[in-house]
Image (tube, rainbow, N blue to C red):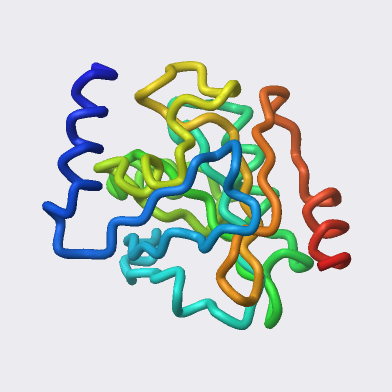
Length: 180
């Protein structure tokens, strides 16, 4: 399966897609412009990263539905933390699942109702942020790891964290944003 993803990535990044096809390397992402994207959210609307210029944006890439309870806990805590969801900061969990998968989950697991999920089912955004083969990925090349990005008000990447321990990092994220 990893070979297929690489081929899809080459096709997409070679300009075959009419949308902007940016890519950053996870290891050298800080200071680079964050690749723009538009993904469907859990409420059915589309979220475009560039619409959040002027705010800090936290992106949490993770394995999604198959990562229970670790990712589910992280997704829930990120979504309900007012320090990371307010007039100055927007936080999103990026999963490679289909929206229908999470529609079912959220009907049954009400403590996740505030989760701000974005769906990257074709993995284009995960590829552009280089998170499919980071250390924390339990399925390298196919699923993202447990990876955070903080995007600054100017659209540049200010902080990255690959988290093999799958901890809830909200306090750390708030502290970093307060110093930017």
